[in-house]
Length: 173
Image 1 (spheres, rainbow, N blue to C red):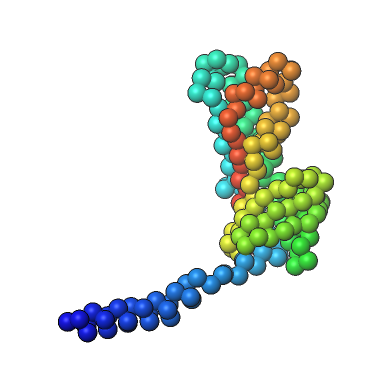
Image 2 (image 1 turned 135 degrees about the vertical axis):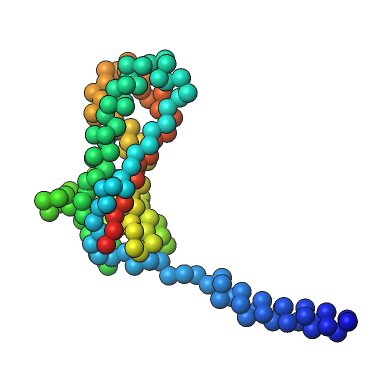
């Protein structure tokens, strides 16, 4: 019985020694160079407000709700992303006009775009078949402010009532 246990333990150790290294090797980052087209049906925006925002400031809350669709539409541009193998990118609109160009850096599945339009970087992720751009709180707040055209007092209230905001634009090959 003891020999069977030792044999089982040895077999388990041998199996682990053979199998585990293959499970732990680093995977290659996905190949993202090429042309990506937007899937407008999967473009979204989410805005989180304070719990009492709609009660405390109903007019401003309604204004925000009224421009969410317009902000979402801004996330549908670029229509096309072109990534090169030398880490440059080009965003194009539906007419083929260049929206912005710059450099990108890839860290596994994560990609950071840098250009004058996005000096702090615009981030995305890809598995090689789908590419998703992520727009953070500051970007969404800036887009909302553009459409809301708030006076200074409203701007202060607006900034305090938005706790978080994010947007996603999805692209495919």
